Amino acid sequence: LSTSPVVDTVTPWWIFACCFQVAWTLFFAQDLIPGSLVCMLGILLGLVMAILRTDFLPEISLKEYFLLRAPFSLHCGWIIAASVLNINVLADYYMSSQETLLMLAMVCLAGIAVIVALFTFAAPRADPLIGLVAAWALLGIYVELENPENLLNMNKFNYIAWPQFVIESVRRTALVLSIASACAALISTGRNIFDWNPLSRLAKFYNVRQSVEL
Image (cartoon, rainbow, N blue to C red; front, side, top):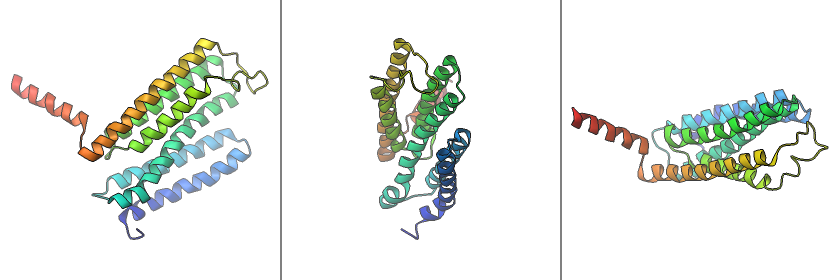
């Protein structure tokens, strides 16, 4: 595996991500939340670039995929979730208003769904692992908000008395997006196994229909 082109492709971006990982540890240990968010986004950039550069390689074996490529997807999926968390922590750190915190929470949930969709339909190779990690993270939000003791703890920093209907709305949204992410993972698996791309098929169908009408 040491002579695999995957190794040469991912090494610069892996080093890039590791440098930001070290910096994130230092910033986070000192509660420097803005700096930790910048470092988290740096880690994410490094992992995304490693994935995309690898996916543009002509062909990789199953062994190379599972030992060299798949771990980056797992790590990237986790960092996507951690970046979303870090964004919301930063807003809470600056004691943002109730409206701003709720807006950011919903935008971040939608952002996860968009990223999963991009890795499912727009990436050079569909990535089921990103969707699976997203489904796991969103399901965790759903479970956590079933009994939100920490959120409603009056002694917590920047305490806000969230109405139950707001909590339940966010909870159900997380569940829906979790199921959607799991479905996206299945679609990605189908694309990889059967070389099935629903968007390209839809485009071909549209082009055929246009030519028939002409």
